[in-house]
Length: 150
Image (tube, rainbow, N blue to C red):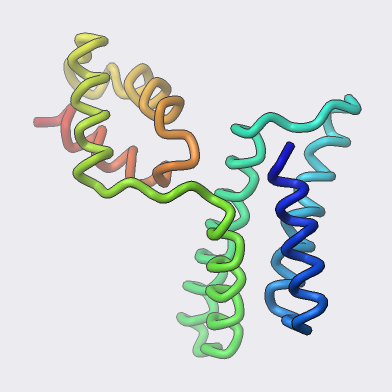
């Protein structure tokens, strides 16, 4: 896919600029993508959706680590994790606002006829599919819960 090529290009630029933080971040992305490809055992490249999920996972891991480091008083490590998350985020599509996510959730609820929390799984599945890479799962979940419980 083009994401792998983009990452390789960015890695070369980071090497030339001697940007160790960006280089470490990009190497982690490349490693995660290669690992995902070898897990399936196929020689085919990953789909764009699979790549986006990997990138989202890496960003979330870095943000979660930063929170833990901050709680432990290690601001130096927290800043490093947030900087890496920012580098990886550049390869993700622009994130939607909560209002835009809420519109999609309302459309899916109307289309599926969902009523109450018993239909949360059905709604979450469709919304997550539509907003793959464009919204955080936690944000989607919060909005779906709010809409279904009201």
